[in-house]
Image: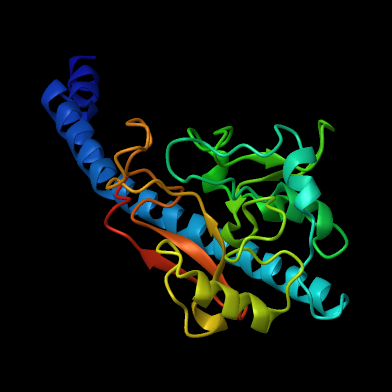
Length: 239
């Protein structure tokens, strides 16, 4: 009996061995978690890029069907839930894209296209500067992209806005506007149409809780007038 007991005792883990195993598991987890987080962020970026490309194609189809003119739905900027809501911090306009979800309904079959996974996380999921719903309906599409060139309901249309314009006129007007935020583009490849939310750390008027934060930390995805979309790094948005 003593021999059997001795054999059982030798097969058991000692406390020291158990602690060593726990330490090794903790070390491996510490090494793997950052890699998993980076992979998740890359996946979110890729999903967002795909969404923006779909938005670009949908808008292009709408333009083709309407005499090569961008939609003019300035009325929706004030009629949608929350109305036109420029905020006094940055930016000083309302680039939310709820109007686009209404106008492009027939070309964007999946309402999830208007929000990538990263934008549905805190603090961006219900942030007033970002989210806008296409109607009061509980199942209405929630948009979480910005469309800068469709950000004001001015009458007449602001020079740096695209409502109802043809592409060549829109580019020429944007060049003439010399908007410091948009720059002076040389053509459609440099004209930003849509982007995911970001709050540069260099803008003093941005709320401290948002300053330096972005849907995709370290940069943002951008859709351009010619239809291409890409991720751009920005050191001002490290969070």
